[in-house]
Length: 611
Image 1 (cartoon, rainbow, N blue to C red):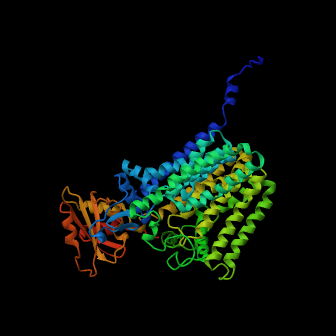
Image 2: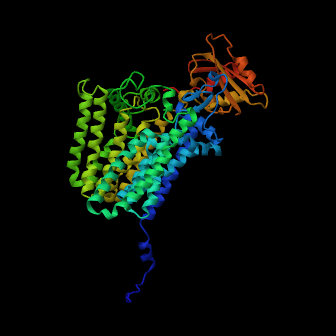
Image 3: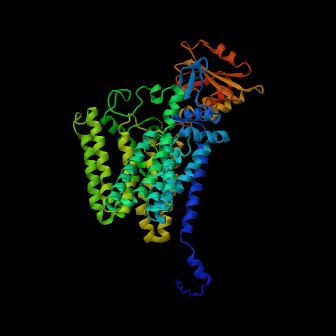
């Protein structure tokens, strides 16, 4: 049977054509600009503040492993003497040397190292993260929310700081967002198996990079996937395989990435079950009791660290605080790990976000969250014995996670997709916080990086009230949002990140001073001789020393018991007869050039700024 289609020609002028163009184009250009801003700021700050050098032990190890992987090795023979070439978090065992970290991020960093620009890796992830935040925010809500969320992410002090380093967190956040966005697409779009594979790649890359954080990231989505399968069984079993297929693809791909962790342990030590972290510090593991932490770990200790870290997160998230960068605050950011002296107020955006997202149901949501906070308050303010035992502490964590994820069952049963995904955005950072209560130490030096994988979700939630205001205030309100971001950038982000300039005594100036002593066209051997030497005494040179000891500069320790002793200096020099020797004397974390002219140059130019 033929169907007759009525086609009517309607005159269209140029104005009509302009109106027919998709309104999304302005958002696309804004997000491209924000992504380029993130890449550019990473490039600038990594050069000006961090001088493209690792300032933490973690970065040194990542770079060490990346350089090995770039040359096709996971382990290399241990040097002799080992103590002369010691590095933090680098393990020597059975004649082999290797890093303690999973190879996921070092393998990514190796691409940048192979290209001669390791900093490009995190700068690229910075740009991709902005794009993924936009995609996820637009998918769950709309493009206005996605764009503002992308702007909050691009201007976040946490993002600006970590994207400028060689830490693994920028990669983890980027692939977390890929995982969450792909999960949304496999639930709502076509080609669900392909999106299942993409979600598996996202989760798998996080597992191979930061496995503990990956558990927290995966848990809410695993629970929601289970709820979806229950709904299919309840309503239409014919759709079971169609629903299950992308989830199986996700699981298989993620497990393949996860297999790299025991495989690396097998290659390194011959036992796939060994936790390489414990080969450096036997207590470096998650959990409660005497097994974990320098002096054991309890729920009370976990809460202490989390409260300290959240006080800084409240400022570092969007760069809003009450107070200035006084010498006391700068000293805290460089050395302390307790309560942040200023009052952070970035969390103020998250309260109206609940109202915008849940509207008439906000009272019920608020009550649910308040009951959860009440459960936390019971652990914080109760008697020390309330959750003192290992079993009681794990019970508290388990009840907290169940309470947090129960709403997924309620809204999933009602098929309220928008509220489900809003709750998933809420659950992701809270799950990170709850699970990190089981870890024995907090993190503030490079911001509260243990919670960083939740920044994208928090930015989308924070964008909701701002998008509501922009919708009603038009261009004037858009200008106010932009002004707010720029003020936070100038008044908070840049001075806050600049406090880490030459942190841990690491500076390009050390390297330049040593190179200035070169009298012939020969590679350099930098020897620091002293007592109780730490990696900080030689950190700048360690950053440019190849694991294979064939770089232009090779740095070694010469630890002695007596400051006037030469120790193993002659033995070390004999291993490098072709190199010019640059001597330093040191004690603890401090060192000074033996050459008087170099010492004067260093003393005048290379010290970190005070206060």
